Length: 364
Image 1 (cartoon, rainbow, N blue to C red):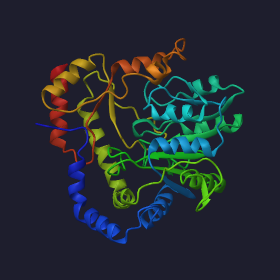
Image 2: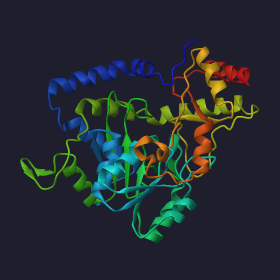
Image 3: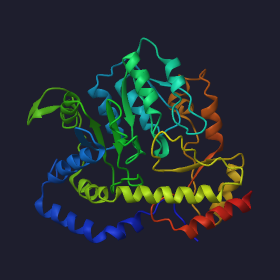
Image 4: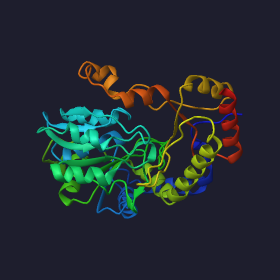
């Protein structure tokens, strides 16, 4: 038995003829920079997500960075976010010269704790970056109400939540801007790096299109210092095809998650908690248990992939630890010490899920 964390080859083979044909067509047209597929994907994604604008960029990290630039976050500003996420969330704040303010997380959803956000606001706070972690939307109703009252902006980190929604409104449409990643393992992934920024504000969208293209509104006329951060035309080809299947992919991810949770119900493991405030699309299926390391060793012995997201919270990473030595985030620390993730992808068969569950039960 050999079960990977994600089966990119299996998914490609189901779409091979369509993807190969579309790539060959794009190659024959030779319009590789901000070409017709990028433009079409931006419109199709905006329509799917229910937003006015979608701006393709080179990566999810760039999406966060340029989103903060577009809303004029500056050195000296504070941006509140979670420490239990991939480092790109905080990197984007640091790129600007602003200060990441880490607050603790909810012990069940692992998303940012809105009460802790409220307590961390100062006169230097300009924005909040909630991460829709592992595919479950953060508590956006409460956060939006808080930010409206305090005149703060919201940049949603949607890297793991494409297709998730709250009361029918998609993540990426719930804040000032939304930042998406299309890293290959994402729910909607391309075959390299790619990203997208969403917004309903014309002025932000216009600024983003300038920033991603060397600060240029008109060729060879540069208005600001910008970046070379354009979504690749060939990646857009792949994303357009996979976008048509995203709802089914997410439905199948939820099938996998439910099957796991049913099988592990009586083991004492904390399985993923859905708070009922939004649709969880299970980018990761993440568990908590004191015997995490024993369980992972048992899985690895059977050639079953597993991983820890995230073993070191951001406030304890080498790059940040000197600035946050006195910061105490007990829930984050406890979750990092006990969390582990199992394979979850649309093509994962029920019998393999059962086999994984059996290995875990034997390990306990």
